[in-house]
Length: 411
Figure 1: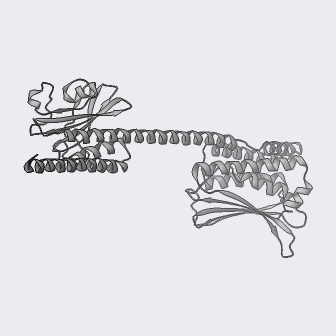
Figure 2: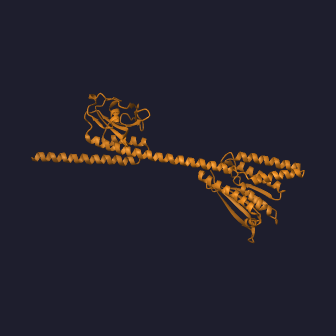
Figure 3: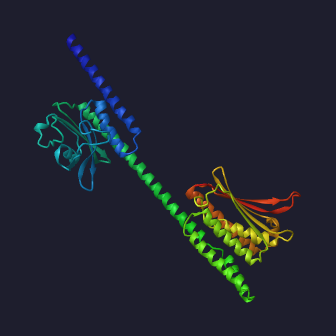
């Protein structure tokens, strides 16, 4: 081999090596670029844009197959078909089998056309171009789309372009598959969360509707007692307040949240009924910080009633040494609603010793329902609602009642 031939061979090998390195760099560039794309649309636009930028193409269009209508739809483009970002100028649709693009969809085999004027399948879109390269995007052996590029010069596209685009199409298909799996997973997760929320809301509704049968029974007994004792005015007053409370409770249990004003109104009516039933043996004080907007602050309905009932029945009505007092204090502290229910009753320990098993079971049942409702409310709405119960003591360390504190992040 002559020196000239050796030199020519060396130049050819060097050029081949450079082309191989450039091919690998281009494929790696596409692989890295696709990592950040999170939707199918982003994947396709990224491919179209980088075909132009990295491969020095003048035109690139990516099609996706619309399986319902059996047509290829232009989904992304770069070049003359893309005057503005994420916009295709007069997008076209190609039926399966029509044009070079439609033929590649049908066969699943890539094609390079050196002179489109000699190919009767060529479909002119915006302007005539003499070179075309068309590569299928294959997913699990099925063509789901096409990468198509054209050039005004004849025989522009070379085997290395086909190798690069085939690799890009494979990367594109893999990324689309991962995106579809991720989207399906997210959809399933959203559906699961939605189903769990509906289940929780249904359970919450059932818990809200669990009105205390003992309270209803005692109220009716109280009305009956007034009637039997011929205390008509008291019976009428009690019945009026009782019916008003029933309406309030029914109204409040129709929704998951009620205004603080509505909740406190129902709670106050309930306390007034208990005062009537117990011959006004205890006093009641309600303090609401004026900075709280009672109409815009919302709370779960009838949540505090079981704790107020416990304070009255198991604490205040057992108090013998001083005037029983129930105090409800509403404050807004560091973005939280804080409601304190305090009584100067006999305290939890003395109450436990003086009550039978039936009363204790009823008391525990009411508290359990309230705690379960709070748990569900937190799961659905994330308001960090909680109930804390503390024993009060006097200066001598003796029991001085109980304080129940409800806190909840303001919505």
